[in-house]
Length: 241
Image 1 (cartoon, rainbow, N blue to C red):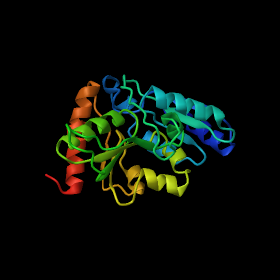
Image 2: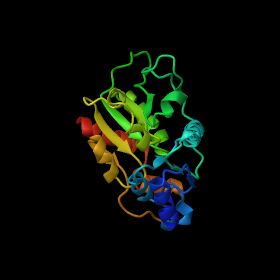
Image 3: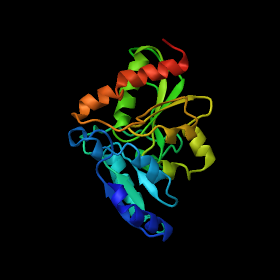
């Protein structure tokens, strides 16, 4: 319901005030509450406000880091977009970009490599052929799709971008290491797709219409937020049937 406090959010950003705005309806996952409670366009619109950090965390670890980073800010407000669904925890790897850094350090940079290609059976792990970018509840879908693709011999990297605003301020070499130009990019977020094209995505699994009144699981199936559809989208981008 950020529309009700839009002026306060904007003024906090303009005045460089450390205000933390907490929003709990982040997607069509609020199915039973209907489209009025499903902010398909709000994450994208909040990201457009200058000097406002926007976080859409995928699990408890990303949420804790988001709170920590927000508290450390001195000249900008933060908007936390939290899920109402139960989300699984995703194991955080030690960052290959900083050998002695923990996964929590990588999260604080707004975007990080969550999972490199997985090996199937006794086959060696191959280099990634594409990157799946995801936020919030869709990170779990990206990881599921990664496993489906691995079974078909298609290695992909999964990148979690809990805060695109923080990630965009990182040094260019870090951003290119997370999102190499040579790899096709596919974004997954249960919201408007327009925002994601700026990352050079070849495809976006998004939602450019209002939701419906139904249980969350049915809505995610209806609108294509499934591991099968994400995997199929990656295959289409790579020209694999």
